[in-house]
Image (cartoon, rainbow, N blue to C red; front, side):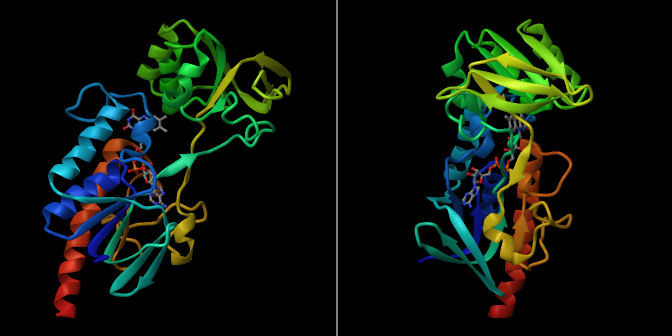
Length: 310
Ligand SMILES: Cc1cc2nc3c(=O)[nH]c(=O)nc-3n(C[C@H](O)[C@H](O)[C@H](O)COP(=O)(O)OP(=O)(O)OC[C@H]3O[C@@H](n4cnc5c(N)ncnc54)[C@H](O)[C@@H]3O)c2cc1C
């Protein structure tokens, strides 16, 4: 019962696209997800760079993609994958709740989790003013002052979203320029609700039960200052979710999966897609593209394997 042609680990845009393609190739497909289908799209307010969709919320695009997989009959189950064992022609997928699935090919699209600043107070005050998700927690900071840490597209776009809720935002970025694209920066500045403190690092998140302030230090002058803020949102990059496959030897020293142009890892039958890869551009559209390529390659691999096994 637990035997599949392909198991897809992670139902972000990469995994859901891979599932569409393997299902349409008539492969017995299972998609395993430990949270909700959609991945990071579920915690993104608005997306306006997925071709053909115009401006949609992260929830809408997640729902559209998931419904598409369900219309095609993709089997979807909750599963927190804790281990993948390579047995050559078959792989075993183990989950936290004890299920073991057998499959000929695996496509791993487990994405990333947010990177922290490691500053004192950050962990202790997470959920007490410190947050990683504007769409999840933004409403708690209505008409309050907040800090947004980071200067890339995620930080600036999420700050623009938060500006509709909060009173004022201080954006603190370690670099002396913002890395976000010009359009995102323009939109952020047009809100007239943000100050930008560039070239500063976070020293500490302060407060007893709740965040009260954030101390920052200029990277060059070492001058410190305390910004009074009830909320702080941290968007300074991501860490790959690959702890569960570290024994397979398919990740680099930072934990990103290494693949070739066909999304194949060095273990036959195991593919990596999306943000979990060592790649230049981590976006919904590039994750989806990786998913389609991996699915087609997995399909070819399974055809060859079936010939060998018959
Ligand atoms: C704040 C923010 C805003 C963004 N805005 C945009 C935007 O406007 N446009 C754009 O194109 N991109 C945007 N991105 C980037 C985009 O969200 C990602 O590039 C994309 O979601 C990556 O898709 P993925 O399928 O690789 O992984 P993810 O979306 O990260 O999904 C991975 C899934 O795998 C699951 N998973 C992880 N480990 C396991 C496990 N062990 N077992 C089972 N399931 C597991 C996770 O729960 C998750 O659902 C944004 C990102 C952030 C953080």
